[in-house]
Length: 573
Image 1 (cartoon, rainbow, N blue to C red):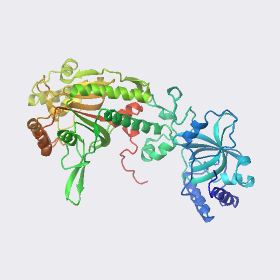
Image 2: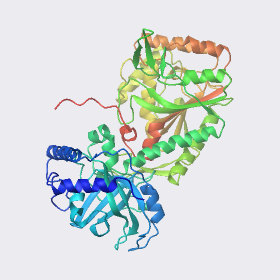
Image 3: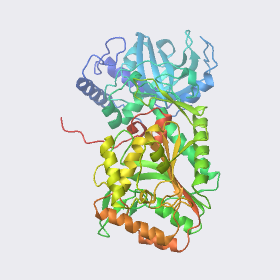
Image 4: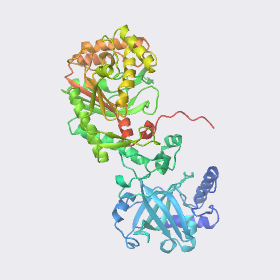
């Protein structure tokens, strides 16, 4: 399977090296490690100029691959040590992550593609390049370069699965020095590993990660140059594969239950669907401000009004708030709305979704998670149903010993909660509305006990403007939040479908906004009008994709599971 022009590229490169134009290699690896990064970059630019001056394009348009590296490993994994298939020709392409020189007539490369490695053995005795030019030809290749290989399959005498290169074609040079590559070894077939074999490079969901074994450790560099992180820290790609599998599982789960996936607007006239501060943008043609959505809830419920009984959306949400280890101003959520269901149905469905997801991704309903940092032993989190349930107001009385006034709208209740926060050192930034104070107190006394999946249920109406009143407990709503490892993962409730009560709740939120709470909801008259046409009894559910991905990938920082997290701009110099 000879590629047209391949020999010309190889010979031209070797001719240039032979003329002394290309920098010669030094040391066993010959990767220019003896030079500083700036000098290395300049040398590589000179190499490009030299190739082009000789009529060789260092960035060819096309290279025909016969098989991926993962499929190559799977196809030829049964070869025995020292076995060669001399009559078989394969063509692979990937990135060189290690280069070793045995002599002027034998080079070894570790070639990576989609996280899977194969060894390339390039020997003068079976190369299509003349022996006198062989060493000069390979002096062009540096660690980080993307190359094409044409050769035959086999295993080395030491048992390493390899491709024995008859030809090597430079496809895209890497102009910068890469971080030092740690040579990782694991058992991998077509990119798959087992839990028992997982190490720093080969990892599966549900077990702890060892970030200290990363080649590139600096977090700032990893998050700003994610391509470099993925390139040298091979474990990282499995984080994002796991995240993708989480989304795929949810989508399949809902599709199988006759939910319809929909899309709702990202920009809105009114920010609604959650208590959060929005991002503001401006529409030039209409000359008006719009708000990036903080949640798709109000639009999705209008679809249920219209007769789409089961709808869901997976997509971005934006909240103009501070960010920390578990919060990002731009995040991914899934929301679904199910006609003729209530919050009891949704609790059972949540247990089914999460236990099934964890089992499918990890092979167990128990995972290991470094909740107390990578330097401390991991904890075990058990997703086996049924999940513990905590009644919020009852638990605040029985566990925390609080005697909160029953009329939560009163000044007395607000003063009591503010005093409680002061007594226990619970910080609640202004404005100290009753809803905000209750949320902070609940976090301190109840959420802190929720390591295994736990439902906190029956929130007060004052905290839940879109949830339906509780059918037996006055002043409360049929709402739950699911907490895992002390952090909220899901929020759901029996939906408020009385338009008169909904409008009243919005009016109460409006008063909170006027008192300085810029996270309180705005009145959405269009939504209230939709409710007047009749929303059936409905259960609504939302889950943060990023947070469940954090748990399954043993990530303590939300930026670990965002390919391109929001970062502060770097200062010059």
